[in-house]
Image (tube, rainbow, N blue to C red; front, side, top):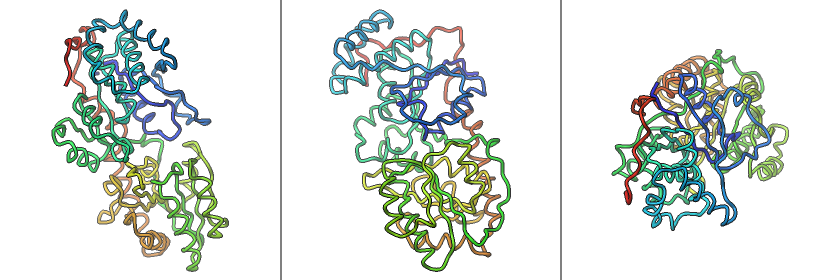
Length: 420
């Protein structure tokens, strides 16, 4: 192995909607890597996926002082535990003065845990809080950090480009989950393009066995899964379902997931009189999602770019449906066209995100006898096998780390006053 002890820095762990993080951790552990998880916030999710029980990495919650006196205690402990802490912390003070106090304190607290647990590399998911805290700990200890960027952390209107540039500059490498995202970051920050690496989110293929899809019955069974937030576009699916029925088609739409727009979606379903064709299930475990997909004639990911600029990177459940042989309809948002391809070999039906008529037409297409369900599904599985295998993706992440002799001393401390 690489000889590293890797600290995964996550804002919340476990988080019900972030199955890709658990999948990545399991794949890296399966190839022998030694991981430790550092969570910056306690989870408030009421349900958890059973795959969490397979994670061997210990979980540590990083202290988040709520009082000034507790913050001083964090600094005092760091002064004792982190070699050369005082001069290095002083050198960082000019930039830390503009940073939220809790981020600074958690960065210091993480630095203590990095030293005490012998962490040799930090990896954060999302280039926001988790990456900021990992960056501070890295500057204080000399232990390098990397970050996987996703969607909200690079597309949302709230993203501070100056802060994001600093993270990209200081990271040992930056992972983009799609070629679209890699190009976006390279165009926005050309000076950091050499740090960008394409490593797609993978899935555990063995958990999603393939079978050829059967012809749809008299009622087209439509499944959709995701958080009930604007960027998922589920309101468009509800409207398309109502129009499909109004045109004489028969379908049932099942949407699994919870979120801030649940009441608005329920109100829309009632407004359109679509209670008999649209069901909102609420959150479901991965096992339950698997059953939903197996029963579906088509899976729909009607993603859009939100008014705040936020967009979906690539829904993991879209990959899972394709792996299982469920034909898919998806919109052309960010990295989705890299997996759902409308030209030969066709892997699904790709529609413009702003075209409601195209979404309606896609439902009619997959329900019709002329749609090559089996050929499309087999091509989709082949693409997922080739590009989204979590084992191969974990190996790609490991390859980004330089080999380290486990008996070698840790990284040299950051020189006093060093900073970019």
